[in-house]
Length: 282
Ligand code: NAP
Image (cartoon, rainbow, N blue to C red; front, side, top):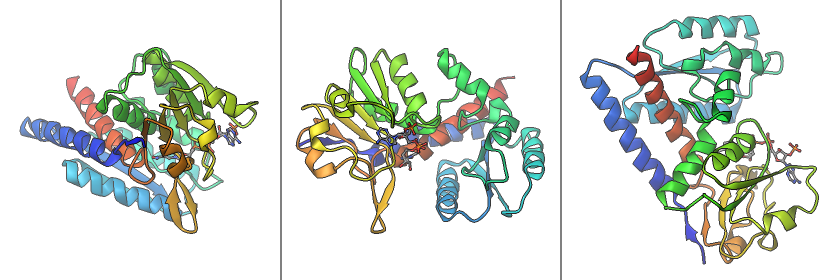
């Protein structure tokens, strides 16, 4: 039976460190602030934004929430972002995705000042990650690296397989594993003989978004299995991995919920702290 990689414990540890450093900055008269923008009525987005607000408060980070109507135009949204770019008490800006279809996400991301882009989504921050010279890492992949480090799981020299190539999870995940000297393979919907590739993985990351996608016959004995998926079956949250059967084979596995999920917000707090430090160095 696998050892469970407890994202809640790793997350609590990281949040405690962030909180201590926020208090240290506060003692020097420096406050840390995150602006979160929500456009429209997406119920999942509302929950994420509420969770981010709560996590900020617990860490001593000021949270500024902007709730905008579904009919908000791209120009109005970008005008708000420009105001926040110039506001000194806002160190990080996050625009909750997805946006309503009439707003171009890339234009909105591009409007956020790179030094306040705590999701690390803008082109210059993505480019900096590519060359290994960055201030922020995208929250979910960075959270996965935090979990691996916390449990002392070596990445160097390991066969790492990432299923999924999205800009927010799969691609940056592959890059972070590569930076840590993993030998990385990225799989996607056009990959042939997927199981032959995944069975070779010492570290297998699934970021597909399909419940029950990773089965035991796709996993090498002794592997580390990281489940990024967040799916609902019969209203219940589950990952991509058939947990019970894969846990019989893998050495380590993240559960859903309680694995990768809690890490995403924790890294967001860490990035906001980093942003505040950088902006106050000048
Ligand atoms: P996405 O943009 O939909 O990407 C899914 C990826 O899976 C795509 O690259 C797709 O390939 C690939 N894929 C689909 N079917 C496949 C198949 N049969 N074989 C191999 N690959 C296949 O999703 P995402 O934004 O990366 O998110 C992935 C999952 O992670 C979702 O469940 C999401 O909710 C979850 N998530 C969780 C967190 C967290 O905090 N825990 C954060 C972000 C996302 P193509 O590129 O070829 O289409």
